[in-house]
Length: 219
Image (cartoon, rainbow, N blue to C red; front, side):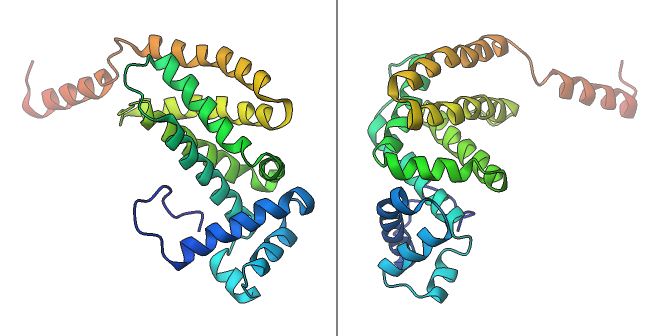
């Protein structure tokens, strides 16, 4: 389930609808039970699913539900953001991160439990993957169309902002998180300024010219 492309425009099928229903149940149960295997079992049982159904629908258990929750919050944030037109890049990133933090705050107690689950060493890979996925959505909303190495650099930088910002939002409140984001956005702007005017294709072009001279004897 965690490998399914997020935010698909396809019509939801039975499995999609049932996943969301189980997620709703998990959000209700997590504040009491935590984000764990027991919570998954009880959330599935609340939706009338057998153990076999659970295995088919959520083969990775709590990890699958964590991915579903993150993607729901991504969708909620993008819906709240509207258009980025007319905003400077600093404003776009600030608004994007703020919207994402508030999207998760709507399910605060469950989100806290899920955040703790993703912080476990065994789930760190999933947490990083989901942060990257969120960063990708936010950069695309902000108008980024880069397909070269900038695509990856921007998402790496924003992921590094998102992970601590979201954690601060869940456990220290909105003001602390917003202040942190405002400081860290300077990192994004420094990167944008640094890359301005850089010719990143130069090494490839020079290598191509060198190979051409070797082949054709051009000077």
